Amino acid sequence: MELLKQRIQEEGKVLNDQVLKVDSFLNHQVDPLLMMEIGEAFRERFKHEGITKIVTLESSGISPSVTAGLAMGVKVIFARKRKSLTLTDGLATSKVYSFTKEEWSEISLSSEFLSPDDRVLIIDDFLANGQAGLGLIDIVEQTGAQVAGIGIVIEKGFQSGREILQSKGVRVESLARVQSLQNGRVTFYKETGV
Ligand code: G4P
Ligand code: NA
Ligand code: NA
Image (cartoon, rainbow, N blue to C red; front, top):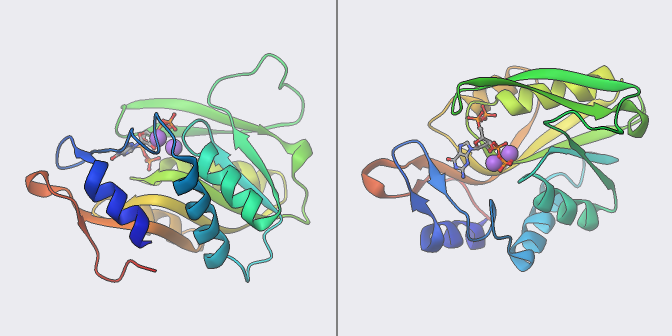
């Protein structure tokens, strides 16, 4: 997605060889117009998949998921990272390890909003080592629903996430695929596009 790659080049800050900061439009301040374009791009990529629900993880996955849900005409469920006071019945949960934070956490969602008839698109803001994606696949499958694909806003292609998620047999689509963050520069894979 050219517009997204352009915004990353203009506004992204390379913190080190592993981490790209995009707080001006995705992870802190949110640009609604860009998010609308991102939602359209996900709709285009998954239009033949019969998607009935979108599942994401709070917090930064929510804004691109809502615009994708709007574009596709489906509802959006965000998995929670912390136990909710009111969310207690029929919980699907999974343990997720973060290599970045070096800690385990538990993510959960209520199975009441998914059924075996659902074909779910999982969306997340970043793909690094794929651990959040694995956890999301796990909790969606616990409800009997089917994972139809994973849509990622920014993929760090030099980390192992894509291989890990594809090894589960799931289609992975990212809108911007970063090849390298070396020397303080963002380089994209050539084939990323449209
Ligand atoms: P993984 O799921 O792919 O294995 O990723 P990891 O545990 O390493 O990621 C932990 C958190 O850091 C996630 O956000 C993830 O989106 C984010 N992250 C990973 N790499 C980058 C990066 O290069 N740049 C930015 N900006 N974020 C990155 P989170 O803790 O769930 O936060 P949020 O959703 O509340 O924003
Ligand atoms: Na994040
Ligand atoms: Na995230």
